Length: 493
Image (cartoon, rainbow, N blue to C red; front, side, top):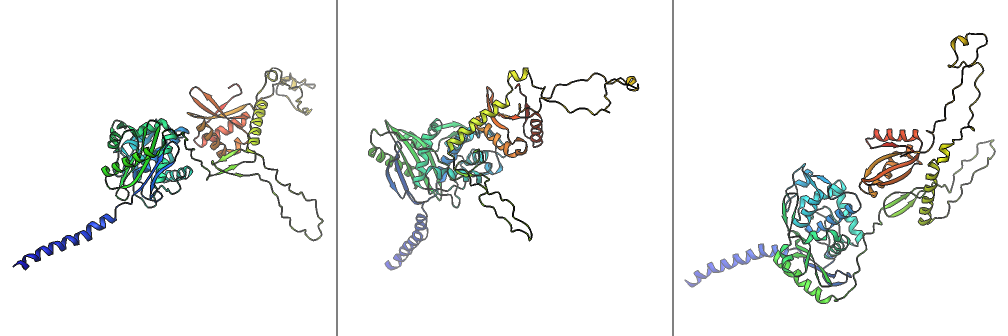
């Protein structure tokens, strides 16, 4: 009887062991890897690291880069916080966490920024990327380029929100570097990351990290993240007195355990960081991977990095052999290209040339008051020409006498005193950008015209100056045919 009773117990134990081996152990094996990185924010000195260069899923820590580029675009005049963004179907369809945007909805950029920073809204992050770069894919490429320029050597972005995607990877080290740049490069926006709640366009959103912000002394940011593949991630920053520490954890098991681990690492960081250390802010991103095309006169045409000079000089000419019976003709030998000129010399020469051109193009009072027309002498009229001003009856007489000659002043439309205005913009950067784009688009009529930005109380006017009236009129008509803004600017303007 005792043996029979033992059999069910053994069978139950067998089922328990089988369940543990088949279910519990595989689930634990799928847990996201753990990584950590702690630095002194003032100097960038590493205070602790574990598995810090392993490429893992960053989850919503990604939005630190999305927001960094938004701040960068605003500072450069590419967009403003009051720009009204139209929400795309793709942005509206992102999975939670989300603000609840609808396709076609119009919302200001500032509300999207708040939703992404405070609530970690995926739809808001995608809308930000599309508003700045036109598409999320193009924005992700800009994110990766900016990451490389910061020294985030093992980071590749594929989207603006951090949802799991193949190839979308970063490290605890790289995310800590990014958090430090957010803190020091755009301090005017850093308070967003410490708000417990914010208005996101008529809807109040609450911070995903408010528990840690409320429980850890000195904590004031920065960003949480969670996906099944990433686990519970957090990049946090805290300041106590003169000391500031930034810590990043990847692969937390839960919100509570992650927060406890970050608090432990922050305490370690404060213990190891010196009380008085100099603040050495990180250098801004150095974009050196884009080519720059420089025209023959030294004018930058595109890009922001490597320089490619287009001189047009030919150093070697291939001459065909002579035909039978032909004698050789003198050959013009191409001269070697001029020696390299430093960028400083080019800039100084451009300024001097533009000043001289403007001086030549601007009529003086003396030249207007006393135009030199005496030296311009028309060709003699043919003797048999009949003048329209001659009296008809006199013209029929045997000895017709010509009527009075009418002398008109010479037209000044041939003077290069005219220009065109192609718009008014909120920043000098935007005005110069439109001038360059317009010059490349309409190079046939604007070649030789000078680009000039005039500051007005209402904004910055983009002008092309040093043109004849006919050329200015033709340029405007051609630009208007392309649906571009343009109107002529006269000598007195």
